[in-house]
Image 1 (cartoon, rainbow, N blue to C red):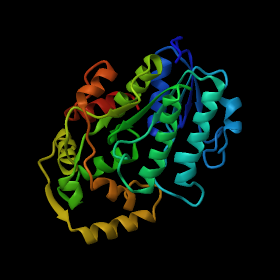
Image 2 (cartoon, rainbow, N blue to C red):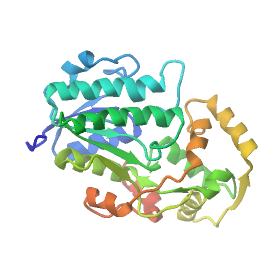
Image 3 (cartoon, rainbow, N blue to C red):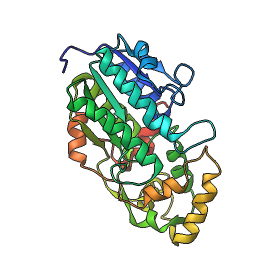
Length: 293
């Protein structure tokens, strides 16, 4: 694996919520960044290493931050999350790209959802290339990512304004460990520059239930605690199926299934990769709006 300094980076998914912050962090560190997005790359159709090979040749590192909430008529999870990234990673190995960072998601290791299985398949394809010694690679798996401009963050902020929270029972019971988007971007920068272990879980310092997380956002807005009403399983499933009909918003049957398991990790291990303390959940609102995005 190469120890040469990283100077040029291709970021796939550069127009997305996480991708924009990754591009900003890399450029602020003085790296030369090429921002790839849907105008220049089609993760629905670019499914062979031969297509990707000329695109990645000459780059020192590649970051894949492409993500899709669910299948749509024009974009399939299998292509966007698995087939295209696997082709991209193979092309990187052939082109001699020194380092590849895959932005995945925490909780995909054991979940049977299509979101998780397709993400996991790409993660495994990349880690096989690392195990074969063909490139230096890290899979970064964030918990819930919070920041200005994120669809999930917007949903949580809207919920935090309500005096009565009607949440799926899983949202009251399961634990999450939200992480600030600027910390995810900083971790990508550190991994691009220095490399790292094969798998990094990006989490904030504190694990709490989803209802407690929304309550903390509510407190930061200066509101009194909300009343929380757990929604039984059947109505939760019905509401998620209604969400399936609106592809632009994050609530769906896939999201409900992911909520039914804890989404936590080792905060100390992540802070070692980050090189500093992560933003605590108690400062999420302040940090998100102070970031300028």
